[in-house]
Length: 143
Image (cartoon, rainbow, N blue to C red; front, side, top):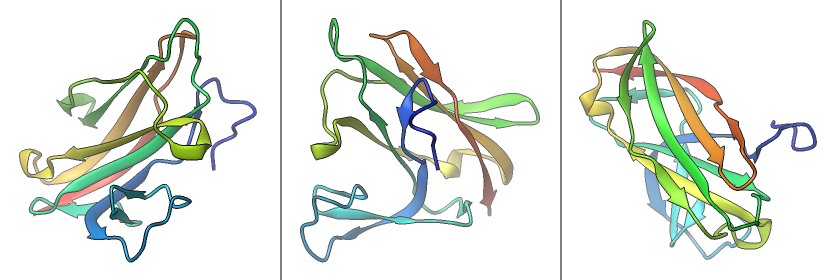
């Protein structure tokens, strides 16, 4: 669990999933339900090259002045080399419902990665306040 009182960038845990399902019912309190679809977490962090790979996280209380500007991307490292990085995504408005946050969801392509163990880095920069964080997690891509 993140330490929201201590961390410069207040951020949720990173949820990795391989499936989006139709939500059984509307649930504004479940952050994994977006536009009627629910992200099913993959707790093993192992993904087949044939699956989708979704990343979900939120940044809470970004700086509001002069305006919200949160920049984020994903990078995949293996053996000290960056093998893939998404294009940066810029958020300029709150979209995290009543949580006063900015919600991000990425669909990363495991098919483009060779089989093996990766370190996935989530790059988050709150441009308005000048703070940043780079949390990492392990992910295994199988054939």
